[in-house]
Every structure is written in C-alpha cells, then in structure tokens.
Image 1 (spheres, rainbow, N blue to C red):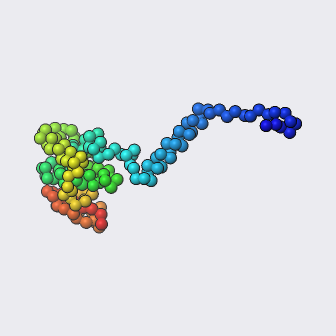
Image 2 (image 1 turned 45 degrees about the vertical axis):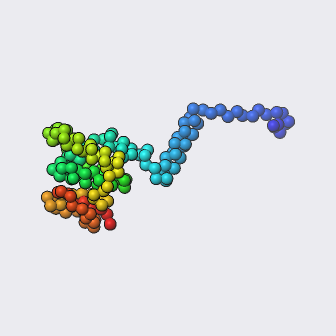
Length: 168
C-alpha cells in the first residue's frame, strides 16, 4: 500500500498479547457454559447421582432421617432424595446438619451403615423402583403435624412414620 505521496506504507503488525488470549479463553468458556445450560446439561454444576452418593455421605443422612423405619423407611427416603435430585433440588436431608451426626451414626452401629449404603447403591446406581410414587417431600405428620409447605401438595404414600408428598 502507498500513502498520499506515493511512498510505501508499513502494514501494522498485530501481535497477540497475553490479555487478548485470556479474554478469548474467557469468552469460549462462557459460550460453553451457556450451551450446557440451554441443552439441559447440569453435570458441571452438580455431580451425577452416583458421584453424589459417593462424594457426600448420603448414607449418614438416611440413617439420621429414618433409622427407626428400618430398611423400608430408609429405602423410601432414598427414593424421595433421588426424586429431588432428578428435579434439580438439593437432597433435603436436614438431619445431615446435626452437630452430633457422627456420634449418632457410630452409636447406631455398622449394620445400619451397611444397610444404608446398600440402599443407596440400589436406588441410585441400579435405578430401583420408586415406592413413594414420585414424592419430593416427606414429613412425620403424625408426630409433628402437617407442615405449611405441604398445603396444596398431593400425598403419595405413607411408609413407616413418614408421609410422602409431591407437587400437583
């Protein structure tokens, strides 16, 4: 190229700076996240069910929530937890917040630990049948009464002390 006076001009050379590369990588990452969100993939936000069962101590939550209900009660709670996770909710095991959870679990014994881990394997890895008929919530209604959040929800099952609910 030549300028107005006929002299050759130098082409400006564009050099990538480190900041340009960082901005490009951030943009690519942003687009990947947007695509994953709109295609329904949530694995980058939450681990899959099997990973969740292994990484967190859900078996402790089953014992703490319904050890009195035995195998049947803990199985029903595990089905409800699976339904909650499948709908994008958290596990909902409020008993996991107990300060003395580890002491309580130890006090219950190794038998319940093995039972709870077996239930989680069947429910999450082997996709065992749902005895709660799609319930996402549960409460010991006879002990504590009907909670406010249960109004307008459908009762799906009563297993042990727990009554199970799902939205209409």
